[in-house]
Each structure stands twice: as C-alpha cells, then as structure tokens.
Length: 260
Image 1: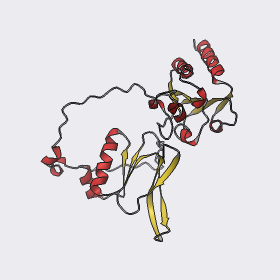
Image 2: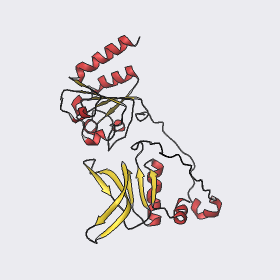
Image 3: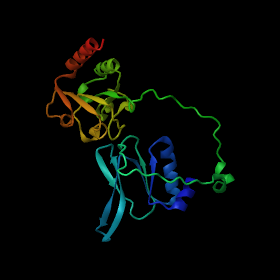
Image 4: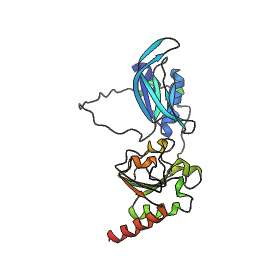
C-alpha cells in the first residue's frame, strides 16, 4: 500500500519515524523503489551540493545527518541520483515549531481494497505480546543525569535518591553507560535518546557535543561539576562548582525541608 502511494505520488522525500515499525517498513520501501535510505537521522536540512568529480550541481537535496562510528563522528549523507530520498528520523530530536503562516493540509484518501492483492496477506499475526516499558525518561519533566565523573554504579544511587525526592528520572551519558554505571535504556545523547525536560541536572558530566545534542534544549540546565571549564557549563543556566557527592545530599536535605 505504501509502495503504491510512492509510485503514484512520486515525492522527492519520504520520512519515517525511527520506531520499531518505521525501521521495519522503511528499508522494505527503499528496496522496492530501488532508492537509498539513511537510518536514525538526528537532523535534516535542504541544500545544494556540487560534485567536483562530475562537475554537477544538485539543487535542493535532503541533507541527512546522523551519528556514525559509535557516535564519534557526525555524518552528512546525500542521495543525488535516485528518488525519493528516504530517511528514518529519531524520535524527539526536532523541536516542534509553529508555522509562520497557518495552513491546512489536504487529506487524500486511498481505497486499500483496490490496491492490495491476496498474496499481500500471506503472513497472519496470531498473537502479539507487548512488554510495558519500565523507563520513561522522554516524558519526564525533571531529569537527573550522571556522567563518567560520577565514578561508579554505587554513586549513581545518590542520583536516583535525588530524582525520587523531586519526582524525576535518572539518565546518563554514553561514557557512564559503557562503564556499566547505568543501563543503556537511560542513555541520553546522539547515540541514545533526546530529551527536553523542564529541569535537567547534570552531575559529573563534561558535556561533549554528542551528549549536549540530546539535552541542550532543556528549559533549565543545572550543572554540578568540579571542573569550572567543563563544556556543559557553557550551556547551563546555573553552575555549581563542587563535588556532586557533597552537593546532592544538601539539595535533598533542603528540598525536603522547604517542601513540607
């Protein structure tokens, strides 16, 4: 059905969510249409590209930007020769912007019975089991995040205690996840999830670009760090220079005292 719509409409660009369904559907569509696909994009731009080898200028290409090599570099990918230009886009990475001029989209209806054939239904889903997601960082208004500077899995318990007191969730950097301090489902950044909480408390986080890309649009950022020159401090609204192991117990104490 989706392939038929692409054949009929002939769009220049096709975007899918980088969800389990989108990641399953997009490559099938790309294979059927014999076009390229870039997965897990964290940014999209429209621009021109000049190919020096063929001395050809391509107009209005989709720049598909995504982390590569484990998040160590950011790759910009283009698809100049085939159409449509397909990409899956990671959830939450783009801010919802209001249109400068309100517009009403056109709804086009398709008759599935006229498009689908019997052979399209060779697989039947008998049953489906969906495990409830236990961690929901994305929708939390308050996030307490820790980096490699937290030092250990045991030290992260202090962050969980603060999050429990103020009604938040706990996240971590890739370095903290790789060190085994916190589970991967809580990883924030280009290779993790993107969050926009009302309050983001960064503990022992240096603030490399890969992590900042996943949290820099938080409404308020508080950095707790012993390094006054840490990159995270440049985007923080408030900076506390000190050891998180000494600062957090005081935050918990005075929050409990003043919230009664």
